[in-house]
Image 1 (cartoon, helix red, strand yellow):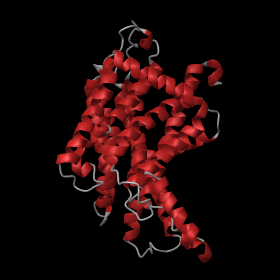
Image 2 (cartoon, helix red, strand yellow; image 1 turned 30 degrees about the vertical axis):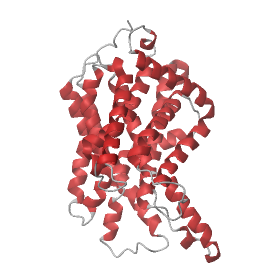
Image 3 (cartoon, one colour; image 1 turned 90 degrees about the vertical axis):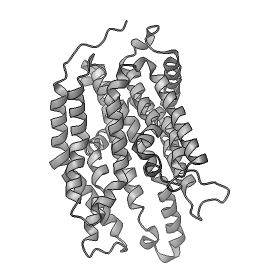
Image 4 (cartoon, helix red, strand yellow; image 1 turned 180 degrees about the vertical axis):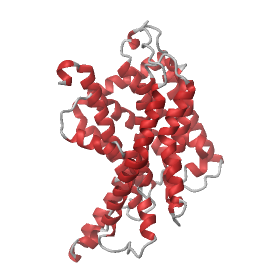
Length: 382
């Protein structure tokens, strides 16, 4: 019905479904990264213990939580600019109230909930760094909007600045540890490190919603136009090879984990390469992937189902480790054969309950605040 009466509405619905579905998959990737895979060797017969060890090692590399967070950043930039780019003027008070209620109110409530738990605060710290970066991006977005014709310069400039920062720390500085990013660079430095991915998400939304503007001479800087043409050419090519692109993204995330690992299972010839070096490269692959997914229609029945789960992906991201903290307060045996399955099931249950009681009302309040921004007509193409 939507496709027949309003093709644009149908295309936007497809994009929304895919984005929500990818959000859910990214949240599951983070959960699997934090919980580690189950002990397959305990689930298989003793003679297949070698296979269990191989499955565990492979799964540990496969579920790259840090890479999934980078995907979150690209999607965040895409969604923020999709929501606000049609407003000729952005009312700062309404914008900041809406954004920080959406992300901050559930976070504040969760902080209060985990305080009585002995290890709750420690578990929550493992996801807070990305939320702090999100808040930085939200804060600077209204300033970016005023110079959006220079999006290319913003992407290249943030990439160069991040590279200089990493080189300075690695060559003459003192990293806290070889894999510590937020501890070494702090919130501002970490936000800078992955800013190019978030800005690229904004560029993807700008390309898709303002196609006419990109045909107007001088509407965007030459560098922005160059990056846009390259991104458009990549998406046209890769749209016919989506499965291969998805596999490449997953394998690239796994490669990030393998390079970071110091395990004896890692080939000796492979050096340890830290995420402040690998993930800034990965974010551009993630941006190409999101750009391709959002311009490629799909009638597959799996997208609406995953999108329904994606509605509470933020709660899953925030709350999944609370299950571990709660189980530690009981006599639960975390080394038992089926412990992993109990932990994961409890994490999903807690996250969904949090979504229904906390996140969803916060989202509705955020939307109410968003509506106070005037529905101004879109800017003319010329």
